[in-house]
Image (cartoon, rainbow, N blue to C red; front, side):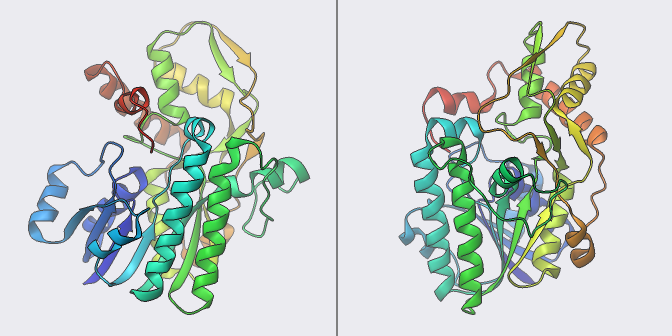
Length: 341
C-alpha cells in the first residue's frame, strides 16, 4: 500500500484528489492543511476512511517549519497543492500572498531534502505564462515550452503567478539534486461543485440569484478553457504515477469559449430573462487562455472527458441547491472577518 501526502488537501482540488485515490487506489493518505477555509473533507465517506486507518487528517500551518514534525518522514507520493489563491485575494493582500506561498514552497523543499519521498507533484498555473501570450503573442493553444513572463511586477495581480514560478523552478532544481522526482502540473481554470465563491462560475450563479439587471458581462470577448474537477484530478494522479522527472504538464481542456458564451449559458440555466450589457474587463486579465495538452495526452494518457456544457450544468445545479439553504456564502464569513487564505 503506497503512502501519499497531500499538502493543502483540505481545499477544492486536494480533497477531490483524496476522494479519488481512496476510491480507486489502495493507498494510505495523509492530508495536511491549516484549514483557514471551510474544509471539503466533511463527509461520511471520509469519516469511514479515517476510522479504517486509510486517511489521516493533520491540522498544521506549514509556513512554520517546525510543524513539519507532524508528518511522517517517508511517502511514496507527495502532492504540493497548498497556496493562497484568488484574484480578489491577490489584489487585496499581495504581500501576504508572497509571504505565505513562498514560505510554503521553501519549507516544503527543505523538508523534502531530509525526508524520504519518491515522487512529488507541484501544482502550478497557467498564470505563469499569461503575460507571455498577452505581451508577445505566443500561440494559443499554448504548450509547456512557452517562456514565463510577468507583465508588470508592480501589479498585485501577478503576485500569485510569481510564487508559482518560484515553485516550478524550486521543485525542478531540488529534483536535479536527487532529493526526489518532481512533476509540475499547470492547471487551467479548474472548476466544479463546492469550489468556493472566488471563481467565475459560482460568482455568476450568485449574481444571477441576486437578479442583477442589466447583467454586466466583464470581458465578454475574452476566452478561456475550463477543466472540470474530475478531469483535473485524473490528470494530476496520472502525472505522479506516470510522469517523467522534472517535466511540466499542462492539465486542462482545449475547448475554448468566450466569457460571453459562458455567462449566457449560466443565465439560461437560471432562467434569466433580463438584458445583458458588456463591461470592461478587470485589470491584469488576459484576452485568451487555452492549453495545448498534447504532451499530457501522449506521455500520461490524459484525456478529459467532461464537456464544458455538462460540467458547468452540474456545477451550477450544485450552487443553486447550496444557495437555497444559506443566506451568506461560506467564504463571505472569512471576507467579513479579514481572514486570509
